[in-house]
Image (cartoon, rainbow, N blue to C red; front, side, top):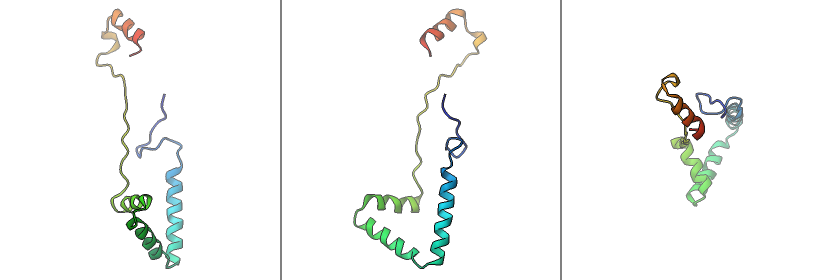
Length: 98
């Protein structure tokens, strides 16, 4: 069985979102104290304009937001209640595993 998923999409117990928020907060505090934020943005943009793919991705992630990931889920869903199935149908389901 798979792990349970929170509404935000991460498995329960995943602390990465909290870590990311703390890191972002720490960075914002440090950058607010220093005038280096513009320099960092300039370096990132320069690298992106030079064709550095990770920098290009980072710029677009910041401007447009990160692309959503899609997840394919395969599930067996009964359209009938089990008590409506015949013994033969139940045996076939048990044999096929579907």
